[in-house]
Length: 151
Image 1: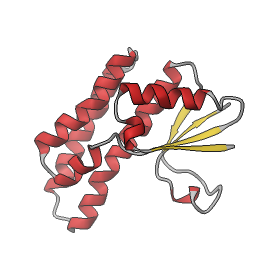
Image 2 (image 1 turned 180 degrees about the vertical axis):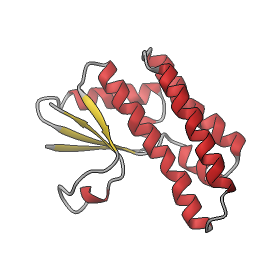
Image 3 (image 1 turned 90 degrees about the vertical axis):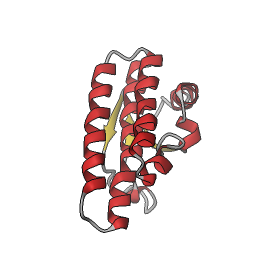
Image 4 (image 1 turned 30 degrees about the vertical axis):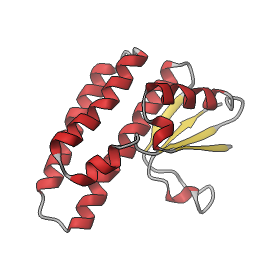
């Protein structure tokens, strides 16, 4: 099994997604766990709490889906709309600041991982999004979001 990690700039736009897909494709001969960060700029936008900035940044996920011509673009739009509502509710919630910040920031990784799994599938690479990864090594055990290919 191979673990591939892509940071925010490595999944920052459609061109970056395509490069990441090609790297995953190069390792298709064995199972791969792909870990992605939020798209570049998303985490900062989410932490800012500025809803206009958040909405603009979240829209980038839909743009990537549209550029790839993914049939599930309608589902992607619905996922983004649902996330916007949930983020707004979190921002309005009366919970401690750091807890709120962590909960809101997690959306960036979650959305990116889900989109990356769909893009891999669209490119003919069998993949599934997973919210939690069981312990493979101590470092992998801490992952919140991952995409697993079947190689």
